[in-house]
Amino acid sequence: MADTVILRIPADTGRVRIARLVAAAIADDIGFDLDEIDDLRLAVDELCFALLDAGESEAIEIVVGVDGDTVEVTGSCTYAGPPSAVELGTLAAQLLGAVVDTHEVGLQEGEGRFRLRKRRT
Image (cartoon, rainbow, N blue to C red):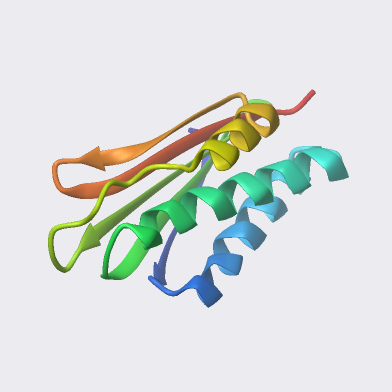
């Protein structure tokens, strides 16, 4: 990734907006239109909440990077105890399928993780 921003935010639903704002600002910088920026914000929101819903954690680490005309956002979260499944509901999965090019979410080595990619049209 040519440009990368790394955030570590408290695992608090009120702080997810920071991740949304950073992703939106980076997308705006590379020429995403308003609809594309809104789609990206929505996707970051849904995926962060999927991590938060799985269990108690101290923080979420978010990495927002640019590769040409594409924004990639990854997130990870280490849980205080055994997490429940890190997954999206049916509606959230369908929504993400419509607004980003690729996305994945789940548990990996005991951590909740997500990844999304959105290309500018």
